Length: 255
Ligand code: FES
Image (cartoon, rainbow, N blue to C red; front, top):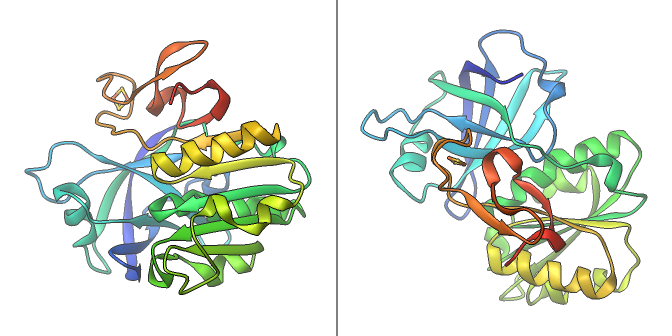
């Protein structure tokens, strides 16, 4: 059940080029372990002139220690204001929202692909899969080594593969060119910039590999009221990414 809760910021650190990790503790006890990887939250912007909450993917959760992490790229007034918080500050957050990834669809050897802040939901997903003894291949792509986020933390939960545009880390090129694609996988899960998701979904179609995309359409209300997040799909026409998604089978999407 979704609720609006105040969270205390315990730390905010820069984890890559223009990307910050916020570690948050809820002000009251909530069942954090019921949150599904791929779900998102809506953060109230501290700057009161920014009216709309910002949708942010859940990056990681440690229910034993009671924290959860968000990854935020300060790209507009809302996200810049959120990244301006300090340890000890409070943020009001509505959670959990959206459908998330279905672990039952992962099979024995899933491939998780992330780019930019789209890397975020893959960390919590990899953690949950490894709790169920599934070692995922995790493929992260970025412009340079400084654009690859949370490398060490991913290594704890799966087999990490990296591509960078400039070859400063991992294999040189785009994620679609990485040699891990030569291996057999049971399903693919992807989140990142739209051209990346589209290219990954094309490879999966060719390989007849089920591919699930977590769309990052612009959102405003986050509750299916404003229709600014609509996505055209093959079978169901226009759907709301905020309430019907953000995760869809890629073969359903009209790219
Ligand atoms: Fe308003 Fe989806 S964000 S309907």
